[in-house]
Amino acid sequence: MAEPLTCQNDEVGTFEDYLSTFDSEPGYLNWAAFGPLSPSVREEIFADADLLGSGRPSSLALVAERIGQAQELVAELLGTDAAEIALQPSSTQGLQHALFGLAGSVIASTAEFPSISLTLERAAAASHGALTPRWITPDDSRVTPDAVAEVLDDDVAALVVSHVDFRTGFRVDLAALRELLGPDRLLILDAVQSFGVVEADYAAADVVVGHGYKWLRAGRGTAFARFNARARERITPMLSGITGAATDGLPVDDLPTAAASARAYTVSGPDTLAAGRLAIGARDVRDAGVAAIETRIQEHVDVILEIADRHGIAVSSPLERAQRAGIVVLSPDEPARLAAALANAGLVVTARGASVRVAAHAGTDTDTLQLLDDALTAFGNETFTFA
Image (tube, rainbow, N blue to C red; front, side, top):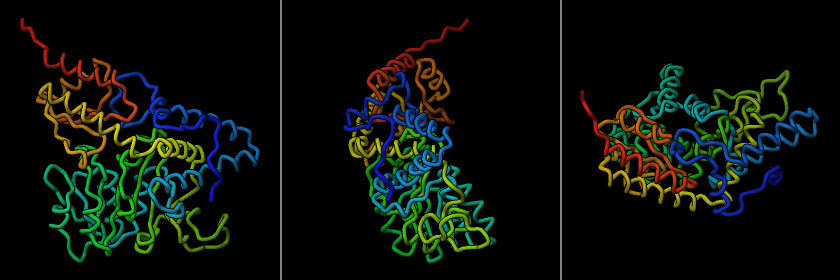
């Protein structure tokens, strides 16, 4: 077990302490795209970089301890053991480990984030027929138990799905999907839009991949994948590399089998600086409490929904708390004009196609929500003069 996490910065002790670390300027409502690095993460980068700059073996070893610390903290948030956690450079790579080692039919939505859809397609192409995608196109792109049940049969080996959909904001019912799949099929979960901000029973999934660069405010390269015992039994570690071997140290003059733990699903040594950022981001979330973070985000979403409704802006994302997380999808008649109006007002959002995605975090301040309200007021009052 890794030593308790120590670093050069002050720890977040309470939920109010956590909220005080959101120090960006008002107007940021793009947390579903990128989370500006937290002060504690920024401090950790410099502290660990200074240690690595010395080149001393003791300093390198100290920073290397971040790997075990990150595994322990992620495991704690997922309610599992650190041996089931493999650090990854991206959530996509975690999904590659899961899907390239599978056989049988795998259910996925055609509207999934490309980390799922493209990885599944590439894995199927490389399998020479052993792996077959079973695509579904559910109503409103929402992967419900009914949508999955329509294509479920004995050939299905797994379902791969986003916990919270990046476009619609829809949050799947993990417990219902687990019950539907039964014990003989795997549930592979992309939790990039939920980890750290949604209190859930992640044990319902056999594989959970996540990334710290959004809601954990830890920057890119801070991904992980959890493989439980059932997943490790059924997923061949096809992409396993040096660090995935069963032996400790460098496997020279030998071809060892893959490790029995989740370490089998790694290629090479993790970036210790990234591991440190993930450890700090996860620690801050743990200390603040996921339940408290989720509650505050839901309160902000309620305010955003009220603002949109008051200004006559249609919302296509779920309204019920159980079916949403931090994403609100605005679907105005003129999305490009609305996106421009929000940008001109100093608001940072994601405009894509016919929608504008707004995402608040627990630390989003009232000034930001007031900016949104004022911008929509101005948007509705715009008049045009023609020559």
